[in-house]
Length: 383
Image 1 (tube, one colour):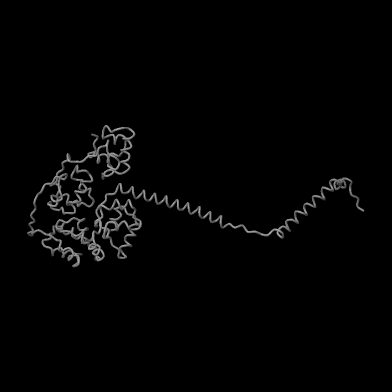
Image 2 (cartoon, rainbow, N blue to C red; image 1 turned 120 degrees about the vertical axis):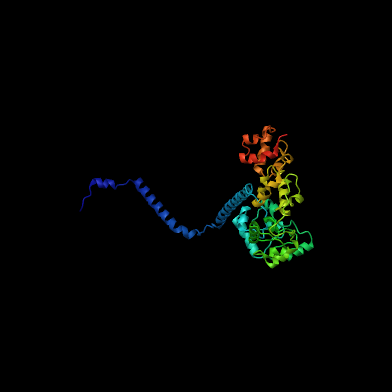
């Protein structure tokens, strides 16, 4: 028989209190194990429904996307609006305007695509407000472009409404046709008469190379002018008697700040439509300070200006000026050389610092850059 050493015996010896503690611990361990095994039998299994929580998450994410979309849209609107402070707008007929011209007018690629899709499906623009109906055209954008749209403001009666419904594919409208001399008609006038870009280029090339229309039928000989086009325009063609190789010219001198439409059309190269454009721009400016401002009228033919420049004079005493100390934002912003931000800054500085003592304060206080100041300076006063 193996004899166990006394030291080992002492190690495995427990007092009565220790034996009771060990027994209690064993019982507790058994109870814990048993409860974990029996719990599923007595407590029904439930599944947590995360749908409501997921829905709340999705709604929150959608609100963020909507907020971002709105923010992006506002940024886009501000970007487009700011562009119009730098663009030089020009007259156009949306029925025949090219993609490149639309881009110069500040339209985005998406807006141009929408217009082209509308036109390709047989859509047409009959009055200026039709352009506003194009999806994506902003309200402020339309207001900027409206004065330059070569369409009627509205259909005044049932007869015009009927004519609108029966307008042919060439795009002529009875209220846009007018008498014209093909030897002196401008690009804008040709557009208003319904001609397309390629037809106008052909005519201008012909005239620039010395070509002359001696009789109505000569227009029909131009490449691209169809019989249908000629029949529409023929009643409105007016050509004074011209002897071949001897075109009589009368030299007329015009003062730009007092002239009238009737006087302007007497100048060789100026038609009714271009003459009205000169008068309208003069009214916006408050008068011309130099002859070269005619070229600020978008698409004013440079060759025409070169030919007539010597016949023009400018009396700067007739300029209508804007008083820096009494005019309000709406008065300043009407001028083509000032944008809304500049107008507001001018008035705010006056409110904060009192009346302007000199016009040059605008430059000294950096209210506007030098080039902008030099352009607007002749139109300002402090008296």
